[in-house]
Each structure stands twice: as C-alpha cells, then as structure tokens.
Image (cartoon, rainbow, N blue to C red):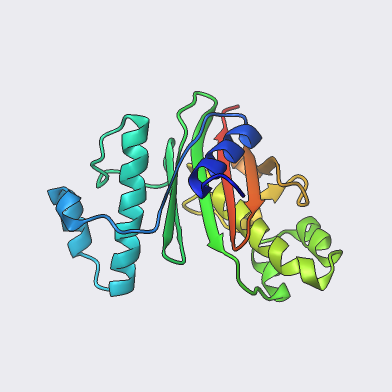
Length: 213
C-alpha cells in the first residue's frame, strides 16, 4: 500500500460509501498541555494507566479530525453516538472519522488489529444467514472474515443514533461476503445503513453511516 494509512482509509471510505469522509489516525497521545480545562477534568477521572494512554491517543485523533473539519478542537462535549464523528481504538492506535451530510443521521468507525478469533464467537454477533456464510469458508479464511464482520457490526452499531438498547445480532448485513454494501435493522426502529470494510496487512477497518429515509 503506497499511500499512508490515513489517506488510504479516507479515499477508500469516501469512494465505497459515496460520501466525502475525513479520517485521522494517531498513535501518539495528546500532550497534557494541549488539553483544555474540561478535557483535563475528564482525564483526571481515569484511574487505569492503560485506559489513560488510550484516552490520550483518542483525544489526539479527535482533535486532529476536529481541526481538519473546521470544528473546535475542544472535545470534552463530544458524545457518542454522534451524527458527524466516530472514534475507535486498538493496539495503541486511534482512528477518528468525520462526515457532514444531510443524507445521514449517524456515523461509525471500527478499527481492529488482526488477531486469532475462535469460530464459536460468531454466535454472539452474527445472525443465522451470516453464520451460514462463515461456515462455508475454509479454516484459513474464517478468522479474517470474523474480524471483518465484527468491525462491520461495530461500525454500524456506532452509527446507529438509537443504539442504547441494541445488540449486534439485531443488525443484518445484506451480503456478508461484500466489502461494501447495505445493512438494516427491523422492528419498530427500521433503519438502513451503508458500510465499507477493508483488510490490510495487520489491521481491519470498517466505516458505516445511518441513511436518512
């Protein structure tokens, strides 16, 4: 991959979802001196060192995406799910995504470092037709596809503005083998989502938006 990860993801997601996206990728934490008083207050409530490091890397990604999109770099008031911004962490790296469009009511990003995954985990986040697709794959492909579908479901979940009582198995991917496409949720909260996913050397990334009906 010749392009830097940030540029590659920005181009890939924009083209695959069909909306202009901004992406920021950070592996270095935000400096404490760059935090506002409100952000320092949030940081002070974190007790775990590992979580504090992850939070600071996430702040760096959020501040970068806010500056690029013309928003204030004061991030303490940003809550999730969010109509324009999403954030994901994995393995000491944070990825933030931004999209401003009247065609969407939510956005989500999920970034995962590739790792071994047990086949049995599929029942916790995939519905029957999605598991049938997985079971048709050879052993060498199942792990990669499980992680990819996990990131797709997570990105869709994050993009859903009404996700507070929703489980991953409630979202249905129309074509599980497709690296970009449509997903939905039924019942009284009928929604349609557009997603795109990509598998690189050691990372898997998916982005999603909730489409306005």
